[in-house]
Length: 302
Image (tube, rainbow, N blue to C red):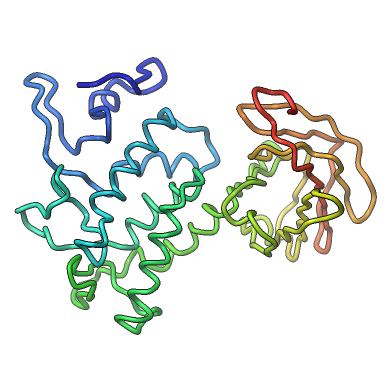
């Protein structure tokens, strides 16, 4: 097994053993060295879940990107399949096992597409758009999709109780587009200013149990970018002392309801983190963050 992308000191030995240098094997026998011949669409599910919880990655990013790329090249081969099968062989062919013809597009959406979007991979959004075309143009029933589709025809199987993960899966796309996580136990909010949804002017929701807000992304003077977060509803006490902002932008200014707030800035785990004197958020408050277009690399502004 190739080890060029492995970093065993950072990951569980069992995860390292499953990685074959390109993707994660569905099964691996450490005694015999025998590997399964299946590429599974949910092989990086744990990586998405830690991000959904606002935690740092468990596996090296190069390893995860390689696994996702393999999924899109094989399971997501649209010249063969209308929708990605849940598993294919190493050659990208349908496996000869039970349920071989099944595609679970919402499962793929959450555990591959969302993660790919979070990492800025174009394949994630491309696969989401492809699924949208299937349900709107082929099936013509975007609001009643089932979990189980035939991977070759794209048509759904309407039987059983297989709608249990459909509606919630759509909401996770919002986290993938914004990188938003409420970290209110630390009086912080986390989002990604270079996230997929922040690439152009837009308004995106920040939904948490303590508040509902919307983030408006736009361009200011010169090449500056701003994010205005408006708190539409506040259900619990919300106190903020820090913003953890992903991406490669330097924070130029931070204000609350039009009043500039002094802040300190530093680089934490590849993110800009600004800290300030604690503020209590109430309904109707607006905070604005103005960014430069400068890239931040290795902790330096270049």
